[in-house]
Image (cartoon, rainbow, N blue to C red):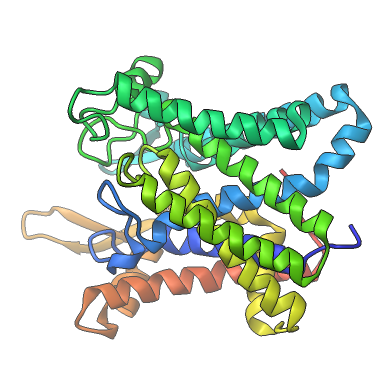
Length: 383
């Protein structure tokens, strides 16, 4: 712990802040291109946020795994299972929240029948669990071998079990029918226009490897210490993995929504390069300041503030009032956040994307204030 890296905390906090930014636009119909996910194959800056966070989960694991190993298997299983169930359960409850909805002029209970079971938090929980087990029992060498085997086996499964001639498309990917059979259509995400869950069970294996790679890099940074050899190793590994992922894309397309193996390798390479730059700037050059403190506080309560950023808008939508009434008596309602976007953010520019972005930045500022105050009071909510 004498080699604790402030830059890793800043990296984790920055990924949380960006997750909140891309998930809270003023309008989903008006978003700048870099803040959208790629339609299918390919990567936008937004597609880097989730894998970077999973990579950061692995970094943190490198610091706590020695304590798990010292405590023994029983304590390891107790802590890992408890944390996995907590994160997964919170994710499900977040989708179900706020448990009531408006049906005309009255509030009615929100039925479990159509609640999405999987999601971002649920994937974090599953990846954390399986990566922890693989690292605990496989150690460094075993975790690397298992991780690479998973990526190759997933590639084989996508190619061999997918639709012949089109195995990597939404319609041809082998995992979707299996996810639907396991979860049921009612509990599947439908944002693609058809039942398809981008955080489904069958696309999770390669995401688990993202955490394993994060662990391996975190362990490497600790063991090598703060020196130029460590930094050079990071940049070489980052360049090699980024190039490898880019080349693999030629035969196994980089795709976040089915989390392809090439996507894992490519985004891991970019994450390593990003961490390398941060370590150089912060640890070697001392480039700390307001910018690093801004992200740092997000990293001290990461899951809490992410959950809050998903829950508060849902809760706020229940507190509505009549905005206008048609001649036939039909009432149109608004809520505080909707009013804030419509009347304060949207008029800022003719381009509606600007107002949508301003709203998202205001949300970032609001949630930053919360984590800043928590940090000032030394309140850290662990999950």
